[in-house]
Image (cartoon, rainbow, N blue to C red; front, side):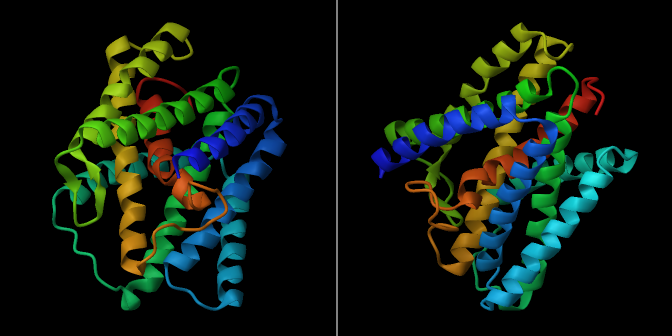
Amino acid sequence: MLLSRLVTALILVPLVFLAVLKLTEGWFTLLLDLVVLAACWELTRLAGLKSVNLRLLTVLIMGVVLYFLYVLENEPWTSGFLQLLAAWWLLNLVIMLSGRIRIAPFEGRRPLRLLIGMLFLAGAWLALAKLHALPEVGPELMMFLLVLVWIADSAAYFSGRALGRHKLAPAISPGKTVEGAIGALASAVIPAGFLVWSGWVQAPAWMLVLLCILTVAVSIGGDLWESVLKRERGVKDSGTILPGHGGVLDRIDSQIAASPFFVAGLAVVGVPL
């Protein structure tokens, strides 16, 4: 399992670096579309849709939504939308860790689960598109965000395996531990130091460090959100396309929460978006 995770990561990470840093805006947007649409396809499975035609129709609707977001990307309301999503992901983290979540079949809530998931995917797409389009430093900041969350995921995994004793959210994800979460949060300090040193964002150091730590925190909430969907459906992974990692949605669940929060946070510290 660990070997397949490493092999997949060794193949994907360089490709992602090249795509983010070298692709033109148009090609990057197309690639981002494909990733989100693949995640939406997996979401339809987690939402319990059984008809292939209905699942394809849902993905088509998602594609139309992404097109309109592309056209309206620079409208003022889009920043407000990301700020609302950022606030929600903070609240989501509190809810997930409160112990009040109860896992149960959700046949009657299937459309609601699907719509909320599509809303989150649209928000992540918008945040990453805006971030990548920033003049001069956009691709670099997007790569930083990806690496920040990757490091946190790895830190949570290894610190949890080595030190994990206390369950973080046992009803949702029994494998996650408090020690793993602490390791993830602590790991944010090193990338945050690099962000301060880079000069890409002109803001007080403490604000950038806090932004990185909070971004990692909400990324954990994104992971837990997808875990709720998977446990309610009784599946381990959202898909099988990535050996050792499951599906596309499994790989980007943390980013779905982290990206709107990070971008909204950049706006708070003075980056024009």
